[in-house]
Image (cartoon, rainbow, N blue to C red; front, top):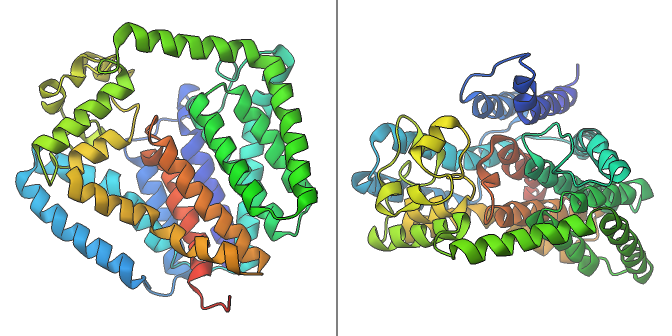
Length: 417
């Protein structure tokens, strides 16, 4: 078997297992041990790096960011509220995206191999979404009420948005093969049927960016026409439910106020933690993260009253149904503080710098397409973190850092722009 086939098959197999593992467990077919998904991601990229890698070639700026982060973390450990085990666990969960990006960006692939991988991933996303979408259309229900193979409808919505990004990227690379444009429209309809506001906004951002990027007047007209059709079809099915959901959210906010609102309350608390533990934060594994509720329940949750908001309390955490991890960025703000959060953002947004230059200047459709993919996946995951814990869920880390790393390898080469 060719090495490229090994990469594609192992990548898709890992994606299938990681994303469908909770559904498989619910059927009592298999039980996966804790940490299995993180180990599977690392093994996937490490083994392919051993097979196809050419050392660890890092940009000088990225090396500087990592060096600065390393010094920061050593100092942060001295002041950390949590114990060493929770700090170390938080280090792994919080920065696994850096490891996957480094390995991915040093795995040598041909253009055809990368495109085959993207097509296979798009096929997986479409196949796992198609039943839910048709069920919603036929029964006139939102995807919240239907069947999904993912952990919950939020994960399905995010995956469909990733599918839209991949489809539009392939549409650019293949010089406008129409099937990829229709893939993007179909999955966008699915996003609309979720009635999840943040997911719909993510989808609008993707299409808006593509509309701005696309200079062809005829193509822009096509985007507007089909977008109107998709929105009309979607709201014809779930328009009333969408309005009900907005009313429910507004009522909840009016009833509890901003400080007792689950997500807003977490942001208030994280700001207070970062202020009180300025400038290094409270330390990894201490606040609103998976490691902060591993082997116990962090006292900071009591100190800053988040234990009493929504379903954040230790009794809810013990039951496995809680809201403490509903939002991602509060744990970064609180645990890393001002300095650490800045370094984190430098590492997070590092992959988009070259794509922004290339997408405007290069005439190479392949480079344009993967630049589009890197930019939109990076910003979509960043945005999702404001309302969900998505950026640290293993399957999405695999995509927003591992897959982006595989694409970034091609941008590291010295092309004439």
